[in-house]
Image 1 (cartoon, rainbow, N blue to C red):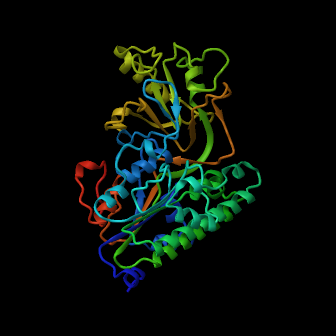
Image 2 (tube, rainbow, N blue to C red):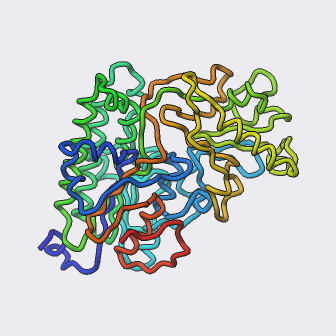
Image 3 (cartoon, rainbow, N blue to C red):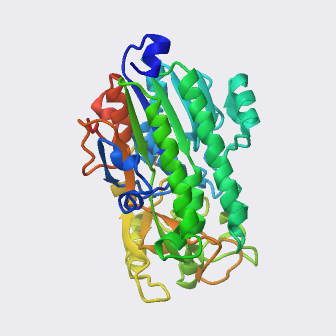
Length: 444
């Protein structure tokens, strides 16, 4: 008899989902001693992320089961309709139904903790603390009891990423451990306390550690041992959470995208400027609205390219009759774009029609570049500068190599992607849905 059988009499299936942001499947598979618990799951494997593989777009997609054309969120920064103004998408900008809302509507209870792009917290479910992009625990936690408990645990929304910019990474690593420890204690507390059908919590610190230490791991660098020590602790915490669950509860662990080493940051708008696609009015290169009227294309992170289309953009210079030919020209040049070492920057260039569909695709990029390993695509509006550079990060997101582990022998993690996770969770919970509600399908 498990913990929930003893405390609640146990009735009906439950799912405990734990996100490990940015953890590649290869990291888990290649380090069995570090990941003893994850490698012990009944089913697990590599899955694809989404286009584009950026956390702000990935988590809305994962938690709804639909692509950015359905969620309305395409990245960390999106463009206003009929404007060059941009904004940072938050929880209220997600236009598709979250899976915990479906659970709540079906009569279940949900506890949701630290999911990116969920601020302000959803007050229709029993408990939520928002994740990445939240201003802090005080405003991100609902109800008040949750805020008080989290403050007692020294819970933080995110690690202090600025510490990772220093040459000496020791303070960053210490802060990553403190953040991870507090996150685990909070998850443990509410896994035990709450009467939930769905527990959904995300460890975001993994993404931060990968950004600043992944090359150390991949190339036997200075902080490889510390990198693996951090992940050994994460796996141990996942194992402890797993032991707390009863036989009616399925545990799922997944990442939203993969990770690889970073060699070159690419300022896409500088490249567009140098190749005659974009120009600025005057000396100011600070924002999108500074582009000139003869601009034919511009870019937003990560690797999203927009044709400056007449009738769609305020000062569109490309006639609708020329759209297809101009986009084809840009696609061809992006496919031929090479880095300093002669390698192609783009693994592939995806059109909006192939990547996005839904009611909210009016701000969809016309092209998205999925880069080859080593190239991290930035916008690059601040000043002109060089096309290629390097910052404090040595790891970057990848479309391939995300991971999914389901502690259920009936699950088949094969040819899967991020869109399959929400329908899988809902089927495990016996929540009725229509197949057409999702871009993915259940894996059980």
